[in-house]
Length: 144
Image 1 (tube, rainbow, N blue to C red):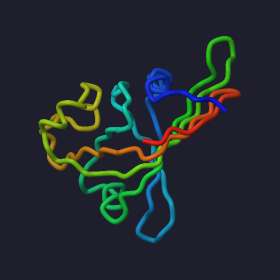
Image 2 (cartoon, helix red, strand yellow; image 1 turned 180 degrees about the vertical axis):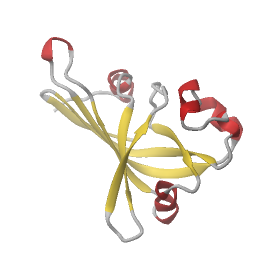
Image 3 (tube, rainbow, N blue to C red; image 1 turned 90 degrees about the vertical axis):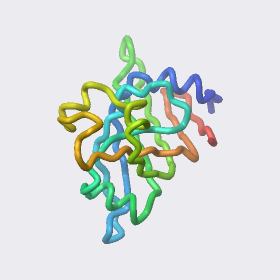
């Protein structure tokens, strides 16, 4: 068992751009989809994503804001073990454009062509409650 701090884990997570965000769908089943961290790598326990307000994921979050984020990193240098991270948390939907600007990157314009002014865009903030990680022989949990 390892005792990584949130700061140490954040450094390791900096290269993990994509996560699978799992939510509970309207029929009660779990569903997941890939989401990008948008370059937010100063991880302090909150994760930020963007979506269209009319999307299924946003409907799922309105009905049940509990989510799990699952990150997987590629094998390290010289074939070292990959990093796996799961984040259990609660999602909040944010529609404040000033908050969007704090987490927006130009790469998002591919999906939201008018930037933060794209009609129907919403930011999803996931507040972590617990984080589990596996890094080779090390594993642990960080309570937030």
